[in-house]
Length: 142
Image (cartoon, rainbow, N blue to C red):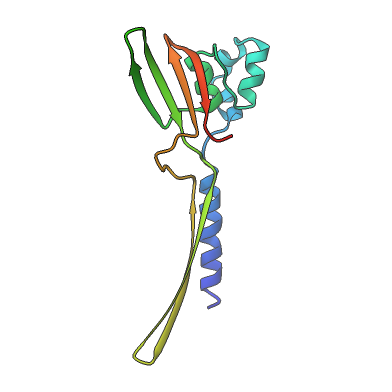
């Protein structure tokens, strides 16, 4: 039993560490410093906060939010829009316990699961572009 607990704790620590592997706005700014420095100060402040707004370009959104989980196109007679979809990336935890008996023996067990956010077909945020410029931001989490 003493060997199992350190192993389980190690797995949990690694799992929690991997959950934070998504890049942050600060990391994306660092990788794109030359481009970022050319943006107006109000835009830089929004990007640092991981926010986007109408009028942003694709490069501004990429630095603020990173690559989208999905991209799709919406076509009408009036225009073609590109939609970038982002999923909720909050860590999710699951616990399980089991108990069973058979033939006079008893068995028990437990498990802990860690995920970096599920993709359940629901978008947390959609950013809509027309001709490379954001025309709307749909925040579905708030």
